[in-house]
Amino acid sequence: MTRYATFLRRHSGQCQFVLLLLFCHLTTTAQTIRYVSPAGTNANPATATSWATSTTNLQGAINASSVNGQVWVKAGTYKPTTATTRTISFAMKAGVAIYGGFVGTETTLSQRPTVNLTTPSSTTLSGEIGNPASTTDNSYHVISNPKGLTTTAILDGFVITGGNANSNTSPNYYGGGIYNSGTGSGNFCSPTIRNCVFQANSATGQFGYGGAMYNDGSSGSSSPSLTNCVLFGNGGGNTFVNSTATVSARYSLFEPSSVTVTGFTSVMGNLTATTSPFASTATTRLAVGSPAINAGDPTTTTATVGSTDLAGLPRFVGSLDMGALEFQDEIFTTAPGNWSDPAIWNVNRIPQFGDRARLKHIVLIPAESLAFCTTLLYDPVSKLIYETGGQLRLEP
Image 1: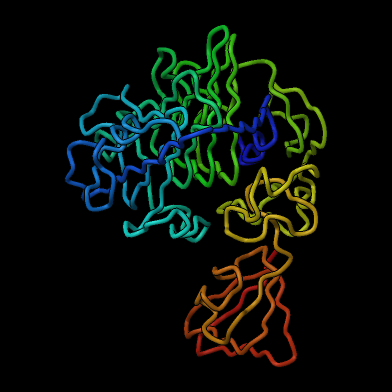
Image 2 (image 1 turned 90 degrees about the vertical axis):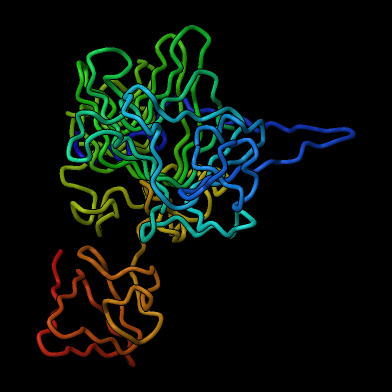
């Protein structure tokens, strides 16, 4: 499966968005937050209602939460079990929002650090439960979601990694990162996933599908909603698949003839590309001239995808782009300083190949260092200074 599949499910599947208006006549239910941290000492997750009383038991905090509850998870790595039982996974819960990336001092959700490409998330859910030198004994699924989840079950701000669905027994041969179980007549499993990175998950068992995610909707339905998510470096057949034959693709980018992506119905807005749409093999940022630029669903609004992309930059620059990262026409300096200092650039990262960079200030390339971009532009008062051995390489 090539990295083109990053776009496959962004507007695909039978996703339905339902706004529920709940009217309470006399009383309202207080929202309870439970706190999880690597150094938590509270053995009772139900009473982990502050950072000071936090628990290490993430699943316990999820289970203890009721509808409209939240779970805040501090920076660190969390595993579904402290033992080595591969069938144990994390599980989301209907009506419960799980947020990662906290420093551990926040009192409001808005104080949580922005989840972006510089800091995709400081909170990792890992399936590495056995020998760290091998993946053969990892959790089959980092997250295994039960039937009955709607978009009210939310996962926001996590790195999901290390799941290895390498069994020959169902369902442990697919869905290394997340397995969504909507199988069975009348059943469904369609959670909301936001600001998450799926990396280094695999599915290499008997059928080997869905390294990052597998949506099991056989006789039922499974249509998760993903916003600002990146699927990168996952292995095992299709990276992100749905088991039903009713998957529809809209405003997605595929290889010619969809050689490696099959089993879907093309509805509208789909394109093909003979070369990678990305700036390099190390990023999912769009390259200059990528066919994915301005090719996203024109009916998309901030109500459905928010106002920023995964990098924390404006989501709408011209028309909407395909993918989790909106193409920014150029990056530019906001202050004088060292080229290698992300803080002087408007996107808070150093320019890379594929970038159109503009100097608005005096910028220094340090001694014996190598800088990169594809196009370099100068404003009248700007200047680029090279220390001894410093170099700038311009390449496509």
